Length: 216
Image 1 (cartoon, rainbow, N blue to C red):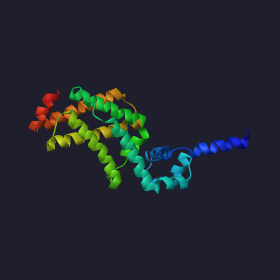
Image 2 (cartoon, helix red, strand yellow; image 1 turned 90 degrees about the horizontal axis):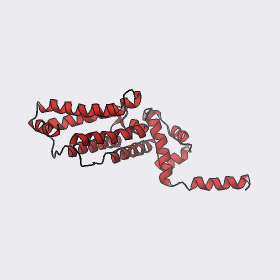
Image 3 (cartoon, rainbow, N blue to C red; image 1 turned 45 degrees about the vertical axis):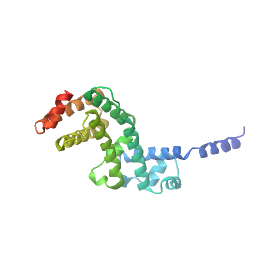
């Protein structure tokens, strides 16, 4: 086969990539950039260059940087949420430990997606982006609530669980940055942290005290 014909057969193969696959490539490149830099500092040209694509192609699929940013974060959130589907059958604290393992599986396997999803302060959490991040937190909250067999948490329990979820997020980001603690140790630490928080809350709320008796 001549060089000319080889080039001709190569080009159609590139064009036959599905829309979904091309979008995934662009979102993966975007997540890599957004995980280490503020969204304002990342340009469409940066994403196109990282993905080996043209600026026009990025605009074709996403319309602009904000649309790409939202799509990339939503993709990361969906992947994380899929790991948090309840798996029933064990003791609540064992189920909590299992959920943490799945959570940190995602953190380790999709570090850029996790970092991009949770990086930044409240100023970066408005509108659609805030809804995406809050959706992940709500999924984790409902998972814990289900594992503890709690239909309607009291205000004290609600605040306790949300505080613990914030600790899990912070621990995930810190672990990605330093990796100076073994994952099983971190996961066990966070389970013990949950029990410690519940013990404090139990001193202020009878419902939490009864819940703690069932758990431990």
